[in-house]
Length: 395
Ligand code: LMR
Image 1 (cartoon, rainbow, N blue to C red):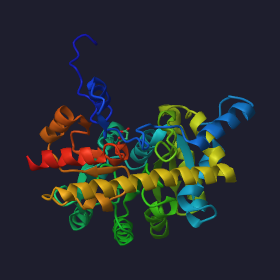
Image 2 (image 1 turned 90 degrees about the vertical axis):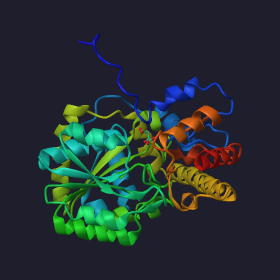
Image 3 (image 1 turned 135 degrees about the horizontal axis):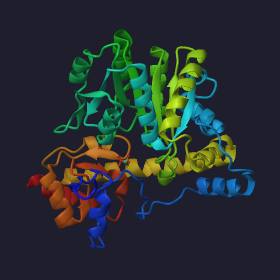
């Protein structure tokens, strides 16, 4: 069974780790996988996380099973973070913990397939490369809607709306909540409103992928689109993650939040998601969720997290500006959009051969799609990387 298998293709993001490890240059720059690196190029554990882990070691009475829903405090805190504690969105939603944002997406996808078999899921072009695989694994047909103009760095909003006019009552629209991956280009609030109206008219379902909350302009600012959605449409799903904003990557800390037309509908949707989770992973790992629950419910730790998150966000937005400014000095293509986009990513519009040249000749590693993780830039490498990009673009 195994011996005849052909070598599978490398994952477009995770596969980069092998190429990076093979590069022995001391100057190599990792702009591939979406992780936040500090000014020194390190991926540290947050101080608030260390403090919560110490608290957990000292106070956790038992490691007995919880339930398929996971950690109850974590689930309540997650709803509070998304919608604001006590808000209407908070009241008419319920959360189920999941192993990372990927687990939350797969849970949402399987649940949607059970509720709306045969429906299509509309995803942005481009999107996170794992989206189509997750959705197809549940059985969905995937349709790509135009989203981003690689040449100008602008949204293709009119074309997007024209394609979404085809959404039917059995279909689902996938949106990125903020800090769009891979482009960094987000809908503004007027555009969120127009999309909400279109979806309400079509009766389609909405799944929001929210993996970068707080890394764009701030937690409340980044949740604004989501919160607007809650005022315009009765039901939707949110797959969220604490991988990036708590730097908990390997702990796999995600959540699926189900918003209903009223509280009772949310409770019912939640009850229907539990057997789906039971067949996928039975129950999610607790460690990361217990840490997040502790941090969000303790005033001092939460304040510490807010300030560590602010440091990450301001550093990312700072290097965005520096990258765009250095590229502007070279003339040629206008890269001003990099400074205005948000989150970890931007798309350079560089062909795979150019990406290969960056890797081989300049030791700058990015995905072959031309996606750059700007959170891997720092004072030591930003100008060198900009010069390399300019050289490759001019060729
Ligand atoms: C990314 O887009 O780089 C991250 O979300 C990591 C991943 O799992 O792909």
